[in-house]
Length: 488
Length: 102
Image 1 (cartoon, each protein chain N blue to C red):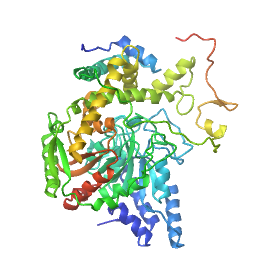
Image 2 (image 1 turned 120 degrees about the horizontal axis):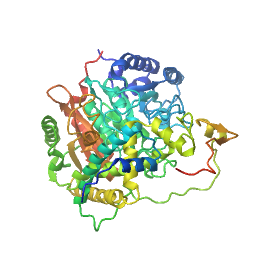
Image 3 (image 1 turned 135 degrees about the vertical axis):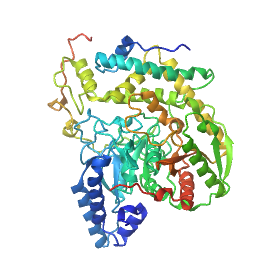
Image 4 (image 1 turned 90 degrees about the vertical axis):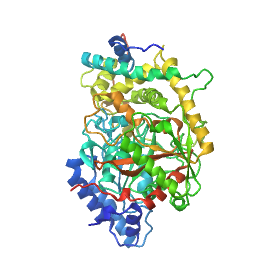
């Protein structure tokens, strides 16, 4: 039976607008479903039900009184718990921040709620967004709705599991090296990492500041476009936020894709790629071709250095960003410090989890005297080459198609003792962050065991409208996005 | 081009630079894991970057200016709201002066 949670963001908002749906009913349904599935999925770190229901009541009252309500009025959504909210706590999936209550909401949270969306809670993530499975969360691991013995992906796995399980129709994640796209692929939904600077990072707890972007997670490209329209745009509080107007992403969905040039680089189909993922993604590319697009071979010779380059730059930036967690300004503080150095060291040793410590140390090493040129500076130079590869490719093609991840969702625990194996889950996604270009993950089929496979489309700077356009046109001729995991 | 092994001493030094207290077990584990990761990232040495400029940021960065107008800001109470310890509108920490750094 179809419930309001099975219908898209756009239809919920339209239903609330004309009074066919009540915001309170929808939000109550979402809260009930979150609660009943939390033991199986563990998608949420916190939920503020009273606040959500009060906001929903207000929207119903405003509508009944004939007042203007926003484009997303009455739509229940969630944000990854590395985005600040003035309600509840912001944990980043870490013990070191407990308890932390932000004074201001993240720009994206304000934007969503100004448009009438109702943020019902905060979703689980790998600690400080460092991971590809949510297994690095200090609290619990989020399960994949398609098979609860497997990971939802990460680091935005709480948001993607919540949307895939139809707890909510849309959510936000953040993506530093693939943290929106890989879990979207593992959960069979749409996830978009915008161009660096397209969405304000104000109020997003920083991991890798030259790589981080916030983006929408939804079941359809249309819903992702609607969410992006609300969160994109210039924000003076983030000095790296792009000072140019965002186009109408929804209006761009219906453009024809005939004649578009799709680049395919064999570097993305090499060793390590699961053969079912490979076949599924190639079939999806063929489907786009049969809609009138042209597929052209391209060459991205430095793509294979992406992981090495990324894990030096991201960790170097993280080692600097995470210096602020020192037991002085907020969060955990060691109970009986011997002196100021011990205050810092013991607080951080006690508060950070294993992967965060590992990345802080790798980054500190890469930046340390004697190693800076060989590691950090070298990675920045290779980054230039990765970026130039894309710039050359986009002279010949409009978008680049590839797998999102080399495998389907892996079993919980499979890679948790092997950090390098976990890093390689990001092999196809990190290059877009290094170059700063937008990229989307689109559900494009299932493997023999019924687990979702995602296709990635990467575009030129600020070409989110084109990525969403192709994804939408693909979803007009396929129904992968309508498949539903068999959950209670 | 040699693979650099991160021994326990290097790991302890890096942990000190990062102000991270780690146990002996952690130091041994991180030495093994970070050595493997550093061996992997050493593949960047294959790439000739002799005439390549570094990219620290994906988009051109420029100074962003605004008018120097006063706007509301946080009260001291707000700024200290999350502090583990505070006193008289300051963050409280152990004594810093008259102390040798280890």
